[in-house]
Image 1 (cartoon, rainbow, N blue to C red):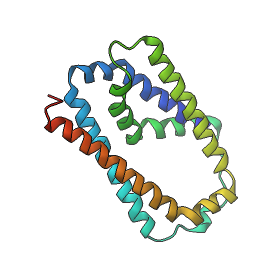
Image 2 (cartoon, rainbow, N blue to C red):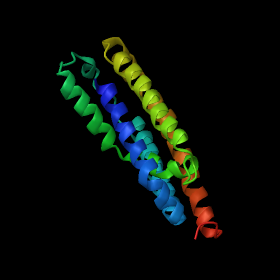
Image 3 (tube, one colour):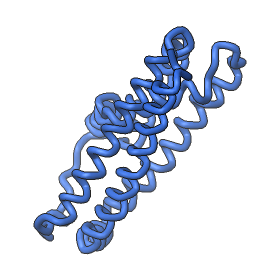
Length: 177
């Protein structure tokens, strides 16, 4: 149910992106560059935060304890709210929509984007939910948490920096007015 809620949150952002943001970004390309800079900055900040967390104290192994059950509706709502209020998701859609959807893009392409990303999100979040519902997976994750945080922290810093530099170069070279 959480996975379905997260997927519906992805659908929400995809629909928001293709219905209004495409026109806004087409009319004002600077907004797209600003969004890429914000997204890149946020991704870089998350990377630095992840790297710092990897250097910090280990997580308590008791976190892999019993999982408290909740209703399917509560789980679905929680997943949806997590995704809709997730700034990474919002910034992703705001910064990436201009690369895929243009005002001249056929409606069928936009529909495929929404359905496709929703299905991908559903599969991915379902795999995560099923995997992390097992105590052994949680314990193994906690045992490797620092390495995972270092790996993804470094990737986030590099990708975020590339987004910021690319958008800044476009603005400075006059590509975006």
